[in-house]
Image (cartoon, rainbow, N blue to C red):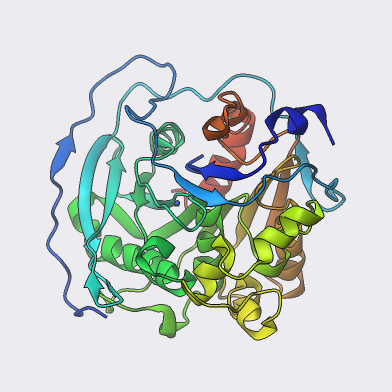
Length: 380
């Protein structure tokens, strides 16, 4: 076990911030409760949220070791050098736009998004950010700095809420929410100056998994549920940071105790696949595990190209998960690229007392991989 992992190992309850997360066919009205107009600023550090993202306790032991990951088909990034710097003009921020009102277990929920629009000419390609949260939380205020940096490069950036297991939702509900957000923003593209033909999804952790699912399932109508069904939910690119793919193998790189906890009935993984209260598991139900795996839906020429980034010291999602998905992409003839961030853990680990872990993910080197891919796939 490396010294860095040993120093961060916490047995018992892990608090996962992980931010670094049948309706009518009519479109809900645009309802931004707060609009912050962009103002000129000096080049400098990107903004941070005024409040820490919410956390929820998840009762499983943090792994004591991580197996070395195979990098033979991936590119290794040494995340040194300067931090990202935000640009001279702050984007206009629209907050709390209701994009969908799905019903789960008989309860209707208004799902909201925040939208940043940079002060650049012409319609903007759209990036939809999907936060992490262990399938338990989905705080749209998370990762404001990186979102602002991407907006600075000329992209409209929306950060969305989605349903989690706290409301009895499953991964199919979360995927439906991501697709609802894509359709909503396409329906309202003219109002916000968005180029509706160029849309990417970008997720971290649980959000990375949902981003991979969204890109893999392009054109599969059974996941399109809710409003704005006259709009396409297909996306043109996927950025997947430390997301899972084959959920039954999510702890494969970890010690035996962690593997047992992840695969136990009622774990955070199994609850998001089968719903709360189920005794089924992805480890024993191969059919359900396949249905929850984005690789199942990959189709050449239809599924979106993917770039993946994973830390080789990730203690929450096994680094082999993105390697497994890279191999699946290649087998299905879908474009995929994987980067391994040397020495990096699971994004922003400040919720475990490591405030510096997230800095490896916000270096210029790492962010250039993301924005370079976006420029190539959806940039104007």
